[in-house]
Length: 407
Image 1: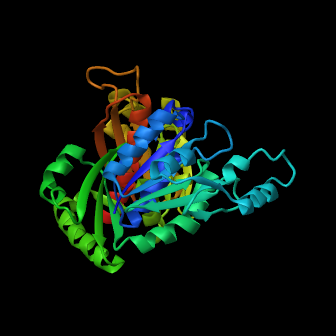
Image 2 (image 1 turned 180 degrees about the vertical axis):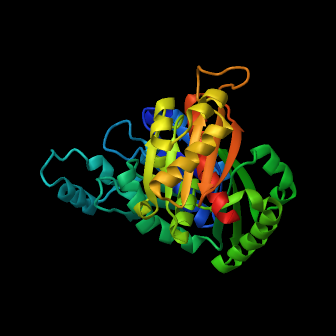
């Protein structure tokens, strides 16, 4: 079965609201094993809506509509779909009663338009609003009409539409996301290009801020069969790119590093300069991290580096605040003063000013002192100030993770 999502509403078309319904519906259709190749947004205009409906059904068996089921004259979805299917609208008194009950005398009853339903339909109405959901089937085509507000469409789809569609689909879809760090999208695509040519399972790379993800998706009769297909592809990908794979699905770098610290029973302390506490804040967002995150300091000035971390004046004078030597002393200092298993330091030039030919904007040093042994990495990051700082945080977390695993 091929599906298309058709969102109706000028407010979406002009960007006044974000179409979160499409994201929700796309994900649910994917998991049901229903193919989808197009999404459409059309304004509240009768002629353009008619054309959008005609085009959608020319390339899909199932069209899911969101929006345009309200009580005002510009809510035209139901009327236009009924016209396309060639069926009349019929007043349903039970829906009139449901709407009256929902309004409960709070507003005058002006919603009777919503009780006119296309003949021969399937109706489902939950008490999240006044618009009923509708399913129309004719000549091998299915129209699912859903209200626009997310608080209405989500429970209506999950409780009523999804069970209906499960009966229509012979397949299920399963997927797994591999998260990679330290390699670019182009290189990932080059390494797995042959796998990307497969039709089942599919392998697709996506570039995100400071990382690349690979989504493996498989369609099969059962979840077990789909998961076997995914596992085969995953084993092959990890054989090629395993050194860059750090996590899976929703387990991002912060969660992965925090989980590793907690699993190993290790404590960590941070000494930050250019990131100004962002590394600590990222770890602090993880529930239960208090068992691992014991202490942090932000030492922007040289004086602070000497006062709180024991960085020597000689080191700062000879090598500067942004240097391998300073990063090493910062990491060693915070590990010692905090009594932590791991001390991590970040010092760099985030920009937009402050760079030189020898030390350009984006130069960052990250030190990790693990039980007295220090390693330092040198980075040349790119982008604006925010991107440099966020990149430094990601590299700092990854440096902690890799150092622990190496031990």
